[in-house]
Amino acid sequence: MLISRRGLTAGIGLSLAAPHVLAAELTPRQTEGPYYPLTRPADQDWDLTRLPGRSARAEGQVIEVTGRVLDIQGRPVARAKLDLWQANSRGRYMHPGDGGNSAPLDPNFQGSAVILADAQGRYRFRTIKPAPYSGRTSHIHFMISGRGRPLTTQMYFPGEPLNARDGILRGSGAEARALIALAQPRTADGALAYAWDVRLA
Ligand SMILES: [Fe+2]
Image (cartoon, rainbow, N blue to C red):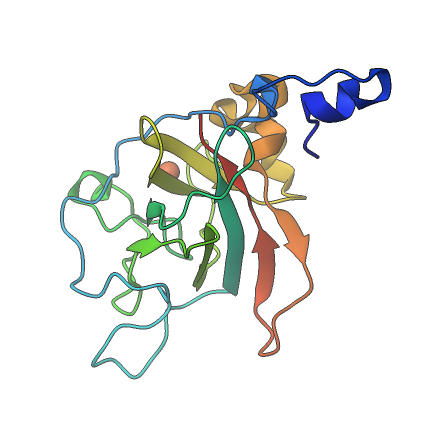
């Protein structure tokens, strides 16, 4: 929940210029990790579960993530760019550095995407839920730009038993809650749905 200084002070008749969002509510930075894509499929669209020319969709639980990119004052960041990458449903990245991982690649999985938020800062993408891998709970990596210094961070899933043991998630301390998406009702076609708003400094 956003707490504005205006809201805090309205009762005593004060008006403060800004900022309206407390620093603690900004989306915290997290490590980029070792698997930022070196190569990508030509297809980098919002649906990571399908690749052109292939009849099968990616293996795994289909999910849809929606949210907004906001600035420090809670205003939408129009046409913010979200560069995202993740492991597949077996916990394998499409990255040569993950070659020691015995989990297989999925030839039907896009693995990464670059999408733009709309004029209201809203974004949406469809993917499969990434599996946990050694030492990590399920997560999706992001590099988000559009206001100030690009934000490198990770999004997590609610209710995951491994969240409590993930050192990178725990490393964000109390701010980690801003990294965990909110579960939403399933989409009309049965995908699990999540909402995750991002606040850029
Ligand atoms: Fe990762």
